Structure formats: C-alpha cells, structure tokens
Amino acid sequence: MPIKRAGVLTGGGDCPGLNAAVRAITRKGILDYSWEVIGIQDGYEGLIEGQARPLTSDDVANILPRGGTILGTSNKASPFDLRDGKEVETERTKKALANIDRWGLDALFCIGGDGTLTIAAKLAELWPNVIGLPKTIDNDLRCTDQTFGFDTACAFVTDALDRLHTTADAHHRVMVVEVMGRYAGWIALEGGLAGGGDVILIPEMPFSRQKVISAIEERSARGKRSSIVVVSEGAHAAGEKHVVDSVVSDSPDPIRLGGIGKHVATFIEEGTGHESRVAVLGHMQRGGSPSFYDRVLATGCGTRAAELAAEGMFGNMVALRGKDLVPVPLGEATCSLKLVTPDHRLVTTAKAVGASFGI
Image (cartoon, one colour):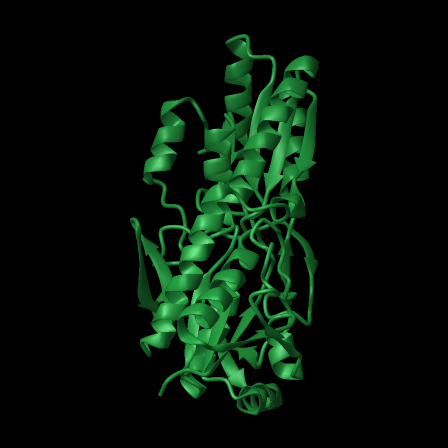
C-alpha cells in the first residue's frame, strides 16, 4: 500500500545531525513521494500524548546547520515498561498506537540511539511500519560503522584537548578530561587519539590505579612536566563499579554516570605529587552545529530511510557499511552495544604513539 502520511520523531539525548535527518526525510518524502509528513514532538512522549504538527519544506528550511532538534526530544518517555530487560506493553502502548491510527500514519521514522531504537523494535512487533535511523554521540550502535553525532562530539573533544595542552604545559599540571560515552569508550578513544591524550581510560579496559600513576611518573622522568588524561564517564578501576552521578527513577535508563574524572585526578595527585585538575566536558559535546561529516551522514540516512519506507522495507535501521547505506533489522541492531575491543586497531594505534590505557 502506498504511503500517504509519514511521522518522524527524535528520541533520547540530542546530538548534532538530528535536524539534518528530519530535513532529509521531510524533503525526500514531499518532493519524491508526495507524502504528508508529521513531526511528532518530544520523542515518544509526543507519540503517547498525541502531540504532533505537520512538516512542510518551509518548516525544515535552514535547519541543516542547527544543533539539537526542532521536534524536541525526551530520554524518559516510553510506550512500554522495562521489566526483566524486556519492553512490556502498558496503557501508554495503547495510547501510542491509537495516536498512530488517529493521525493516519502509514510509516513512522524513529531517529535515536540504542534506547530509542530498542523501543522502535518492540513497537514494530505491534505496528510494523517502522524505520530506524542511527544517531548517538556514543557511537555504540551495532551493525553500523558510525552514527551521526559522533564526529561532531569527537571534534569538540579534540579542540578541548588542544586548549588544555597549553594550560597544562604552562602550569606543569596533569589535566584529567572527562568525556561522555556511557558504557562505550569510543569518544575517549578517538577524541583522545586525535587530541594527543597521554592516558586514555575507557569502560571496556578496566584500569589499574598504579599503572596510571606509573604512566604519569614515567613521563615526568622523561622531562614531560604535564600530562593529559582522557577518561570516559563509564571508565572504572579493575574490580570496582562505575562512578554514578545520580539515579533518575522515572527514566527507562535511570543510571546517570559521572564523577570518574574527579576520582582519577585525586588519586593521580595523591600518588604522584603532581598538581592535577579535572575538566568535565559534559553536554557541550552534544551541542553546536554538526560537522561536515555528520551533515552528510545524517542527510544520507534520512533519504535512505525514506527510500526503504517507499519500498516497504519496514522493521529496519539504516546502517553505514563502508560507503553504503544499507538496511539491517532493528532487532539485530539493538541486541547489544558496540564496544571497543582491546585489540581494536585504534587501541593499538594509540599505544604505538605512546598512550597508556592504565593496564
């Protein structure tokens, strides 16, 4: 059955490139397929509460360079309850399906990361005409080489490290830089590699405090009077738990990581005697205008998603494989996180240029 009306939502944390994807879906749908496009506000919250508005070509004009999302987003709302690791139907599920019917949607585009697309996969079991698009600064979605938002976040981390090198050198300090990434170390790894991090600590490779201290002292013995330590928010010492900043009880993912940077700076200063400072980059990694690469990737994902819907290839996520954008089943894309392996090429590259992983 040909599509007449399509809905699009952006869920989870915001990131650069969301507006580029919304723009691409809207323009492709209108110009090539004569669709009506509906923008669902604030992610799954809008789907549940029935908040949406029409999107025209004029509505998406000039949004390509904008960060954030013109549709709004939420990382709390879900049409399902999470019980024993499974999405369970609730009254909210009925409300979401009723709104899809009320709006007369023939397709629904869900733009998001692991959480948003896990929900999309469950929704597709009840209402099959769902297509996913992979966005997240964490780059932790399986089946795709890269998610949009990641390149811009890493560029920001690189710029921050460039700036911190100069102040670290001036004061002969250890600068500990805490970056995002949740349970995946891609931002710390790639941003740290590009920004010349001397020590890189990631969740997948639990560190030894003594090995981190030794790495700093070995640099000092070679006459290096400053060091840059890049630590992912999910990094932790071997045998210890993650450092948790807060717990948000009404969120599908209640754990908010944070604070590991201060922890690392403290034990480095105590163990080496070198003055240490911590910089938490936080949500600045999410904000701002998307990079050239993220604009191109998000636009490509949006147009390819529209093509898949027009071809009836629902239940899939658009994935980057080499230079191609291909469909992969939503369930396959969200069955586990894409994590850094200790033998990954970028890990060995970082070690080859002198970076320590504290192991």
